[in-house]
Image (tube, rainbow, N blue to C red; front, side, top):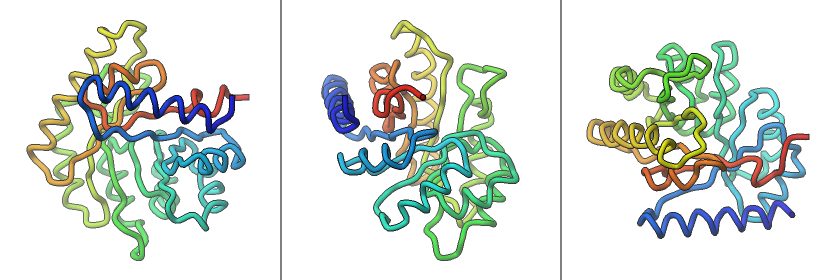
Length: 225
C-alpha cells in the first residue's frame, strides 16, 4: 500500500480511538528515521507535517533538503550525545529526549538567536529499563524547574518509551504512570501540553491514557530495508 493510504488509515484509527475515549488533541508524528527523502516527500504530499528523526547527521541532510518547506516540524527523538547538541539546537524544532541538565544547557546556549525557543520534552524511563534513556520519575520536577529557567528552551511536556507489552492492560500500567506525571507537570508549569507516548503496537492504550502525540514509523513507511 502507498504511504498516503497508510497515513489515511492511521488517521482514521487515531480519530476512532480519540472519539472512543473523548480525546480531541492527538497528533501524529511520522517517524522517518532511515527513510529516504522520497518517502518523506510522499508523506508531505499526503498532508503530514511533523517528522521524527533519531540520527542527527542523517536528519540534518533531510531538513536541509526540505529547507523550502518552513511549515514542516522536525522532532529529534533519539538519545543525544553532548557533541551533537549544536546540530540539534540549530536544525530542529523539538527535542523529545532531554534527560540531563547538561544537555539542556548546551541546547540553550547553542540555539540560534534568530530561531524560536526549542520545544523540549523530558524523557522518563517509566519502565526502569537499564537499556533505555530517560530519568527516574522522581527526578522530573527538579529537571523541569531547571529547564524552565533557560530562555532559549520551551518546556512542553514528557515523552516515554515503555517496555513492550502485548496485553493492553499491561501497556496501560506504564501509560497511567506517565499520565499522572504529566498531570503533575501541568499543575507546576505553564505551556505543558504534550505527552508523547504510543507507537504502532500500543497506540490505543496510549491514547486512552492521555497521549497527545503518537510516534508511528513502520505502519506509515513500511519495514526497514
